[in-house]
Image (cartoon, rainbow over the protein chains, first blue to last red):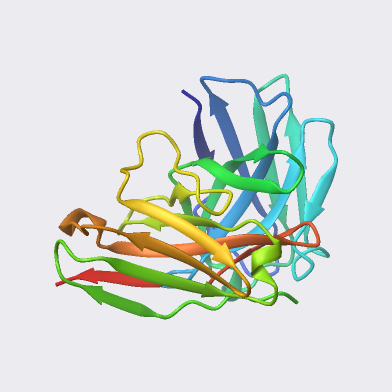
Length: 121
Length: 106
């Protein structure tokens, strides 16, 4: 059974870059889409973007200018970088696999346990 | 940008049927899925592709999607179903989540 685990700093200073890694165990990152989703404290879910193992990506238009998602198949990991962070980027960050059935049916399963990243000086 | 609208809260008595709606322009022409999130936990998909249940999800969870509205129905609601529920769909290759509905089992 595939499991995902986020890791990275829990505190980032304003204007700096948030960097997180998701380690996939119990399965391979190959031939799947992988995604990052975040949830500000007490608020709803926001999709950040996804990557395929070929390296092709797609990002939320509202974050596109600041986001980079990459994959390292040798380490069975994928990563998120978010630049120029502000307090508004404080959230629990989840990684998730993107499951699909055909071209238009896609859903996130499973999810990692999430990691809280606080942006503060 | 595409938006999905959910009621902030829904209340139901144990054993009764709970219905949570998700509205979006021509949502019925897209596939909708639903996630359950309990306090302090990660979301879990309970319905995908409008009406399909992943293995391990109880039969009391069902879904439908037509016109501008997708609906998650929980029949015979149990106390353990109290949680936040989020709908999600895709628009122009971007994932969109509804604002979430807090289901209270009174």
